[in-house]
Length: 409
Image 1 (tube, rainbow, N blue to C red):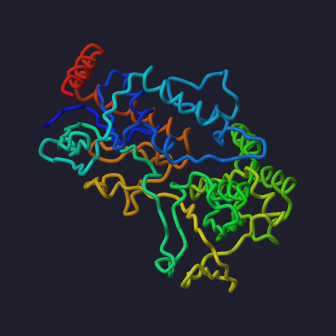
Image 2 (image 1 turned 30 degrees about the vertical axis):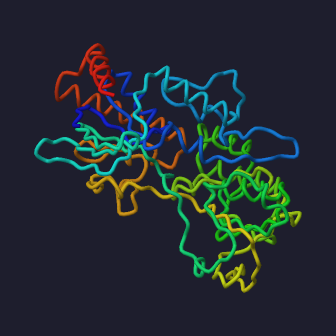
Image 3 (image 1 turned 180 degrees about the vertical axis):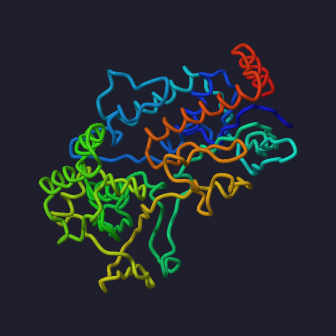
Protein backbone atom coordinates (compact mmCIF):
# COMPACT_ATOMS: atom_id res chain seq x y z
CA UNK A 1 0.00 0.00 0.00
CA UNK A 2 1.45 3.38 -1.02
CA UNK A 3 0.06 6.49 0.64
CA UNK A 4 0.91 10.08 -0.29
CA UNK A 5 0.96 12.67 2.47
CA UNK A 6 2.65 16.11 2.37
CA UNK A 7 4.30 15.66 5.78
CA UNK A 8 5.17 12.44 7.60
CA UNK A 9 6.14 12.75 11.26
CA UNK A 10 7.90 9.80 12.92
CA UNK A 11 7.22 9.63 16.65
CA UNK A 12 4.16 10.54 18.73
CA UNK A 13 5.90 11.92 21.77
CA UNK A 14 5.44 15.59 22.70
CA UNK A 15 7.74 16.61 19.79
CA UNK A 16 5.64 14.80 17.20
CA UNK A 17 2.38 16.03 18.72
CA UNK A 18 3.56 19.65 18.85
CA UNK A 19 4.81 19.59 15.24
CA UNK A 20 1.54 18.11 13.99
CA UNK A 21 -0.45 20.71 15.93
CA UNK A 22 1.55 23.56 14.39
CA UNK A 23 1.12 22.13 10.89
CA UNK A 24 -2.62 21.75 11.49
CA UNK A 25 -2.83 25.46 12.27
CA UNK A 26 -1.61 26.08 8.71
CA UNK A 27 -3.97 23.39 7.33
CA UNK A 28 -1.00 21.38 6.08
CA UNK A 29 -1.97 17.69 5.94
CA UNK A 30 0.28 15.45 7.99
CA UNK A 31 0.33 12.06 9.66
CA UNK A 32 2.16 10.90 12.80
CA UNK A 33 3.57 7.36 12.83
CA UNK A 34 4.06 5.79 16.25
CA UNK A 35 5.60 2.37 16.90
CA UNK A 36 3.89 1.98 20.28
CA UNK A 37 0.18 1.54 21.03
CA UNK A 38 -0.17 5.01 22.58
CA UNK A 39 1.21 8.50 22.24
CA UNK A 40 3.80 9.81 24.72
CA UNK A 41 4.88 6.29 25.66
CA UNK A 42 8.03 7.55 27.41
CA UNK A 43 5.84 9.45 29.85
CA UNK A 44 3.28 6.65 30.23
CA UNK A 45 5.36 3.50 30.33
CA UNK A 46 8.82 4.43 31.57
CA UNK A 47 7.84 6.29 34.71
CA UNK A 48 8.12 4.69 38.13
CA UNK A 49 6.23 4.87 41.41
CA UNK A 50 8.17 6.77 44.06
CA UNK A 51 7.11 6.52 47.70
CA UNK A 52 7.57 9.32 50.17
CA UNK A 53 7.28 9.62 53.92
CA UNK A 54 4.37 11.95 53.10
CA UNK A 55 3.06 10.40 49.87
CA UNK A 56 2.79 12.82 46.97
CA UNK A 57 2.35 12.40 43.27
CA UNK A 58 5.26 12.46 40.88
CA UNK A 59 5.53 15.92 39.35
CA UNK A 60 7.34 17.55 36.45
CA UNK A 61 10.71 18.96 37.46
CA UNK A 62 10.15 22.25 35.65
CA UNK A 63 7.45 24.83 36.31
CA UNK A 64 4.50 24.64 33.96
CA UNK A 65 5.34 27.89 32.19
CA UNK A 66 8.33 26.05 30.69
CA UNK A 67 6.29 22.96 29.75
CA UNK A 68 3.55 24.34 27.47
CA UNK A 69 3.16 22.90 23.97
CA UNK A 70 2.13 25.27 21.13
CA UNK A 71 -1.46 26.52 20.77
CA UNK A 72 -2.76 25.01 24.03
CA UNK A 73 -1.16 26.05 27.33
CA UNK A 74 -1.48 24.05 30.52
CA UNK A 75 -4.49 25.01 32.61
CA UNK A 76 -4.07 27.93 35.00
CA UNK A 77 -5.80 25.79 37.63
CA UNK A 78 -2.90 23.34 37.74
CA UNK A 79 -0.14 23.83 40.32
CA UNK A 80 3.21 25.36 39.34
CA UNK A 81 4.81 21.90 39.22
CA UNK A 82 2.32 19.75 37.35
CA UNK A 83 1.68 16.17 38.55
CA UNK A 84 2.57 13.53 35.98
CA UNK A 85 -1.01 12.24 35.80
CA UNK A 86 -2.31 15.74 35.02
CA UNK A 87 0.35 16.23 32.36
CA UNK A 88 -0.70 12.99 30.67
CA UNK A 89 -4.32 14.19 30.68
CA UNK A 90 -3.08 17.44 29.12
CA UNK A 91 -1.40 15.47 26.33
CA UNK A 92 -4.57 13.41 25.77
CA UNK A 93 -6.61 16.60 25.49
CA UNK A 94 -3.95 18.10 23.23
CA UNK A 95 -4.30 15.24 20.75
CA UNK A 96 -8.09 15.54 20.71
CA UNK A 97 -8.47 19.32 20.67
CA UNK A 98 -5.78 19.96 18.06
CA UNK A 99 -6.97 17.04 15.92
CA UNK A 100 -3.63 15.29 15.69
CA UNK A 101 -3.76 12.31 13.26
CA UNK A 102 -1.79 9.39 14.71
CA UNK A 103 -1.36 5.86 13.41
CA UNK A 104 -0.25 3.53 16.18
CA UNK A 105 1.70 0.26 16.02
CA UNK A 106 3.62 1.58 13.00
CA UNK A 107 7.26 0.57 13.08
CA UNK A 108 9.40 2.50 10.59
CA UNK A 109 11.86 0.10 8.96
CA UNK A 110 13.32 2.43 6.35
CA UNK A 111 13.17 6.06 5.29
CA UNK A 112 15.09 7.38 2.30
CA UNK A 113 15.05 10.28 -0.12
CA UNK A 114 14.17 9.51 -3.74
CA UNK A 115 16.17 11.91 -5.88
CA UNK A 116 14.03 11.21 -8.95
CA UNK A 117 10.68 12.08 -7.40
CA UNK A 118 12.25 14.46 -4.85
CA UNK A 119 10.17 12.88 -2.12
CA UNK A 120 10.75 10.85 1.00
CA UNK A 121 9.74 7.17 0.96
CA UNK A 122 8.97 5.77 4.40
CA UNK A 123 8.52 1.99 4.66
CA UNK A 124 6.45 0.99 7.67
CA UNK A 125 5.33 -2.25 9.29
CA UNK A 126 1.81 -2.24 10.73
CA UNK A 127 2.47 -4.60 13.64
CA UNK A 128 -1.25 -5.06 14.31
CA UNK A 129 -2.17 -6.33 10.85
CA UNK A 130 1.36 -7.51 10.00
CA UNK A 131 1.37 -5.66 6.68
CA UNK A 132 3.81 -3.24 5.08
CA UNK A 133 2.89 0.32 4.13
CA UNK A 134 4.77 2.92 2.12
CA UNK A 135 4.33 6.62 2.79
CA UNK A 136 5.49 9.13 0.19
CA UNK A 137 6.05 12.63 1.55
CA UNK A 138 7.43 16.02 0.54
CA UNK A 139 8.70 16.53 4.07
CA UNK A 140 9.92 14.18 6.77
CA UNK A 141 10.01 15.17 10.44
CA UNK A 142 12.09 13.00 12.78
CA UNK A 143 10.43 13.32 16.18
CA UNK A 144 11.74 10.16 17.84
CA UNK A 145 13.85 12.32 20.13
CA UNK A 146 17.07 11.91 22.05
CA UNK A 147 15.66 9.40 24.55
CA UNK A 148 14.60 6.51 22.39
CA UNK A 149 16.56 3.33 23.20
CA UNK A 150 17.86 2.45 26.65
CA UNK A 151 21.65 2.67 26.93
CA UNK A 152 23.77 0.43 29.18
CA UNK A 153 27.51 1.15 28.82
CA UNK A 154 30.16 -1.50 28.29
CA UNK A 155 31.34 -2.55 31.75
CA UNK A 156 34.24 -4.94 32.13
CA UNK A 157 32.89 -8.21 33.52
CA UNK A 158 29.20 -7.33 33.43
CA UNK A 159 28.50 -10.65 31.71
CA UNK A 160 29.84 -12.40 34.85
CA UNK A 161 27.58 -10.58 37.28
CA UNK A 162 25.45 -13.15 39.10
CA UNK A 163 22.98 -10.68 40.51
CA UNK A 164 20.25 -8.79 38.68
CA UNK A 165 20.93 -5.79 36.48
CA UNK A 166 18.55 -3.58 34.53
CA UNK A 167 18.19 -0.20 32.86
CA UNK A 168 16.28 2.44 34.80
CA UNK A 169 13.54 2.39 32.13
CA UNK A 170 12.53 -0.99 33.62
CA UNK A 171 12.51 0.26 37.20
CA UNK A 172 9.11 0.59 38.85
CA UNK A 173 9.92 0.68 42.57
CA UNK A 174 12.21 -0.94 45.13
CA UNK A 175 9.55 -2.96 46.93
CA UNK A 176 11.22 -6.32 46.23
CA UNK A 177 14.71 -5.14 47.19
CA UNK A 178 14.19 -4.45 50.89
CA UNK A 179 17.55 -4.92 52.68
CA UNK A 180 19.18 -5.91 49.39
CA UNK A 181 22.44 -4.25 48.31
CA UNK A 182 21.56 -2.11 45.28
CA UNK A 183 23.97 -0.05 43.18
CA UNK A 184 22.63 2.79 41.03
CA UNK A 185 24.96 3.84 38.20
CA UNK A 186 24.41 7.46 37.16
CA UNK A 187 23.89 10.82 38.85
CA UNK A 188 21.32 12.46 36.60
CA UNK A 189 17.69 12.98 37.57
CA UNK A 190 16.80 9.31 37.15
CA UNK A 191 19.81 8.08 39.12
CA UNK A 192 19.27 10.46 42.03
CA UNK A 193 15.52 9.80 42.20
CA UNK A 194 15.89 6.03 42.03
CA UNK A 195 18.60 6.03 44.72
CA UNK A 196 16.31 8.10 46.93
CA UNK A 197 13.37 5.81 46.24
CA UNK A 198 15.40 2.67 46.97
CA UNK A 199 16.48 4.18 50.27
CA UNK A 200 12.83 4.81 51.13
CA UNK A 201 12.05 1.15 50.37
CA UNK A 202 14.73 0.01 52.79
CA UNK A 203 17.38 -1.09 50.30
CA UNK A 204 21.06 -0.73 51.16
CA UNK A 205 21.66 1.87 48.48
CA UNK A 206 24.86 2.96 46.78
CA UNK A 207 25.52 5.20 43.78
CA UNK A 208 28.20 5.55 41.14
CA UNK A 209 28.95 9.22 40.46
CA UNK A 210 31.72 9.31 37.89
CA UNK A 211 31.99 13.01 37.15
CA UNK A 212 31.15 16.38 38.73
CA UNK A 213 27.45 17.21 38.89
CA UNK A 214 25.30 20.24 39.66
CA UNK A 215 22.33 19.67 41.97
CA UNK A 216 19.49 21.99 42.91
CA UNK A 217 15.93 21.86 44.17
CA UNK A 218 13.28 22.34 41.50
CA UNK A 219 12.41 25.68 43.10
CA UNK A 220 16.00 26.86 42.61
CA UNK A 221 15.92 25.83 38.95
CA UNK A 222 12.65 27.74 38.52
CA UNK A 223 14.25 30.87 39.95
CA UNK A 224 17.28 30.45 37.71
CA UNK A 225 15.27 29.88 34.54
CA UNK A 226 13.12 32.91 35.35
CA UNK A 227 16.17 35.12 35.91
CA UNK A 228 17.63 34.10 32.53
CA UNK A 229 14.96 36.28 30.92
CA UNK A 230 16.61 39.37 32.42
CA UNK A 231 20.22 38.46 33.27
CA UNK A 232 23.23 36.90 31.59
CA UNK A 233 24.00 33.21 31.99
CA UNK A 234 27.22 34.08 33.83
CA UNK A 235 25.40 36.12 36.49
CA UNK A 236 22.60 33.58 36.90
CA UNK A 237 25.11 30.75 37.28
CA UNK A 238 26.89 32.62 40.07
CA UNK A 239 23.60 33.07 41.91
CA UNK A 240 22.64 29.41 41.35
CA UNK A 241 25.93 28.19 42.78
CA UNK A 242 25.55 30.50 45.78
CA UNK A 243 22.06 29.09 46.46
CA UNK A 244 23.28 25.51 46.10
CA UNK A 245 26.20 26.04 48.47
CA UNK A 246 23.93 27.72 51.05
CA UNK A 247 21.46 24.82 50.97
CA UNK A 248 23.75 21.82 50.58
CA UNK A 249 27.21 22.98 51.65
CA UNK A 250 30.39 21.28 50.45
CA UNK A 251 29.53 17.75 49.31
CA UNK A 252 33.00 16.82 48.03
CA UNK A 253 33.81 14.82 51.18
CA UNK A 254 30.83 12.60 50.32
CA UNK A 255 32.05 12.02 46.76
CA UNK A 256 29.78 14.60 45.12
CA UNK A 257 31.78 17.37 43.41
CA UNK A 258 30.41 20.41 41.57
CA UNK A 259 31.71 21.16 38.05
CA UNK A 260 33.85 24.24 37.47
CA UNK A 261 31.52 25.41 34.71
CA UNK A 262 28.19 26.93 35.80
CA UNK A 263 24.95 24.91 35.42
CA UNK A 264 23.32 26.90 32.62
CA UNK A 265 26.62 27.52 30.81
CA UNK A 266 27.21 23.75 30.91
CA UNK A 267 23.77 23.11 29.47
CA UNK A 268 24.39 25.51 26.61
CA UNK A 269 27.85 24.12 25.81
CA UNK A 270 27.17 20.43 26.25
CA UNK A 271 23.47 19.93 26.75
CA UNK A 272 23.86 18.41 30.21
CA UNK A 273 21.14 19.57 32.56
CA UNK A 274 21.64 20.06 36.31
CA UNK A 275 20.21 17.35 38.54
CA UNK A 276 17.01 18.11 40.42
CA UNK A 277 17.40 16.95 44.01
CA UNK A 278 14.28 15.29 45.45
CA UNK A 279 15.95 14.35 48.73
CA UNK A 280 18.88 12.17 47.71
CA UNK A 281 21.56 14.70 48.76
CA UNK A 282 20.27 14.61 52.33
CA UNK A 283 20.38 10.79 52.28
CA UNK A 284 23.99 10.92 51.05
CA UNK A 285 24.92 13.27 53.91
CA UNK A 286 23.32 10.92 56.44
CA UNK A 287 25.12 7.91 55.03
CA UNK A 288 21.90 6.30 53.85
CA UNK A 289 23.20 6.40 50.28
CA UNK A 290 26.88 5.64 49.68
CA UNK A 291 28.78 7.18 46.77
CA UNK A 292 31.43 5.40 44.70
CA UNK A 293 33.50 6.57 41.71
CA UNK A 294 33.39 4.83 38.32
CA UNK A 295 33.24 1.03 38.09
CA UNK A 296 36.60 -0.54 37.22
CA UNK A 297 35.33 -4.09 36.73
CA UNK A 298 32.84 -6.68 37.88
CA UNK A 299 34.25 -9.90 39.26
CA UNK A 300 32.61 -13.28 39.64
CA UNK A 301 29.65 -13.64 41.95
CA UNK A 302 28.39 -10.16 42.84
CA UNK A 303 31.59 -8.23 43.48
CA UNK A 304 32.01 -4.80 41.90
CA UNK A 305 35.40 -3.10 41.96
CA UNK A 306 35.68 0.68 41.69
CA UNK A 307 38.39 2.95 40.31
CA UNK A 308 39.49 4.05 43.79
CA UNK A 309 40.40 0.43 44.64
CA UNK A 310 37.36 -0.20 46.84
CA UNK A 311 34.87 -2.97 46.17
CA UNK A 312 31.41 -4.02 47.24
CA UNK A 313 28.98 -6.87 46.90
CA UNK A 314 25.66 -6.01 45.26
CA UNK A 315 22.49 -7.95 44.57
CA UNK A 316 21.18 -5.52 41.97
CA UNK A 317 22.66 -2.92 39.61
CA UNK A 318 20.37 -0.24 38.14
CA UNK A 319 21.87 1.58 35.18
CA UNK A 320 20.53 5.15 35.10
CA UNK A 321 22.84 5.83 32.16
CA UNK A 322 20.44 7.49 29.78
CA UNK A 323 19.23 6.73 26.30
CA UNK A 324 20.47 6.93 22.76
CA UNK A 325 18.74 7.84 19.56
CA UNK A 326 17.80 5.11 17.07
CA UNK A 327 17.75 7.38 14.01
CA UNK A 328 20.53 5.60 12.15
CA UNK A 329 18.69 2.26 12.40
CA UNK A 330 15.92 3.35 10.05
CA UNK A 331 16.84 6.68 8.43
CA UNK A 332 19.04 5.68 5.51
CA UNK A 333 19.77 9.23 4.39
CA UNK A 334 20.50 10.44 7.90
CA UNK A 335 23.51 12.49 6.75
CA UNK A 336 21.12 15.13 5.42
CA UNK A 337 20.67 16.21 9.04
CA UNK A 338 22.34 13.87 11.54
CA UNK A 339 25.89 12.91 12.48
CA UNK A 340 27.31 9.44 13.13
CA UNK A 341 25.92 9.49 16.69
CA UNK A 342 22.40 10.03 15.43
CA UNK A 343 22.27 13.61 16.68
CA UNK A 344 21.87 16.81 14.59
CA UNK A 345 25.08 17.88 12.84
CA UNK A 346 24.40 21.55 13.52
CA UNK A 347 24.29 22.76 17.10
CA UNK A 348 21.37 24.60 18.70
CA UNK A 349 19.66 26.77 17.50
CA UNK A 350 20.36 25.60 13.93
CA UNK A 351 19.82 21.89 14.58
CA UNK A 352 16.24 21.49 13.40
CA UNK A 353 16.54 21.64 9.59
CA UNK A 354 18.48 19.61 7.01
CA UNK A 355 18.49 19.33 3.24
CA UNK A 356 15.81 17.90 0.94
CA UNK A 357 12.88 18.58 3.24
CA UNK A 358 14.01 16.78 6.41
CA UNK A 359 13.53 18.23 9.88
CA UNK A 360 13.92 17.09 13.47
CA UNK A 361 11.98 18.01 16.59
CA UNK A 362 13.00 17.23 20.14
CA UNK A 363 16.76 17.09 19.64
CA UNK A 364 17.66 20.51 21.09
CA UNK A 365 18.38 19.22 24.62
CA UNK A 366 16.07 21.96 25.91
CA UNK A 367 13.16 19.87 27.14
CA UNK A 368 9.56 20.72 26.39
CA UNK A 369 10.37 24.37 25.78
CA UNK A 370 12.85 23.34 23.11
CA UNK A 371 10.28 20.99 21.58
CA UNK A 372 7.76 23.81 21.30
CA UNK A 373 10.31 26.04 19.59
CA UNK A 374 11.30 23.27 17.16
CA UNK A 375 7.68 22.58 16.24
CA UNK A 376 6.91 26.23 15.48
CA UNK A 377 10.04 26.66 13.35
CA UNK A 378 9.37 23.49 11.36
CA UNK A 379 5.75 24.38 10.64
CA UNK A 380 6.64 27.97 9.73
CA UNK A 381 9.36 26.77 7.37
CA UNK A 382 7.20 24.15 5.66
CA UNK A 383 4.39 26.67 5.28
CA UNK A 384 6.77 29.22 3.78
CA UNK A 385 8.32 26.72 1.36
CA UNK A 386 4.91 25.35 0.38
CA UNK A 387 3.50 28.80 -0.35
CA UNK A 388 6.48 29.66 -2.52
CA UNK A 389 6.52 26.34 -4.37
CA UNK A 390 2.84 25.75 -4.98
CA UNK A 391 -0.64 26.69 -3.79
CA UNK A 392 -1.17 25.77 -0.18
CA UNK A 393 -4.17 23.45 0.28
CA UNK A 394 -7.24 25.10 1.76
CA UNK A 395 -8.52 23.92 5.11
CA UNK A 396 -11.37 22.08 3.35
CA UNK A 397 -8.94 20.34 0.98
CA UNK A 398 -6.67 19.37 3.85
CA UNK A 399 -9.56 17.96 5.88
CA UNK A 400 -10.78 16.02 2.85
CA UNK A 401 -7.32 14.49 2.37
CA UNK A 402 -7.11 13.44 5.99
CA UNK A 403 -10.67 12.07 5.96
CA UNK A 404 -9.91 10.09 2.82
CA UNK A 405 -6.75 8.81 4.44
CA UNK A 406 -8.59 7.75 7.61
CA UNK A 407 -11.18 5.83 5.61
CA UNK A 408 -8.46 3.56 4.26
CA UNK A 409 -8.04 2.20 7.75
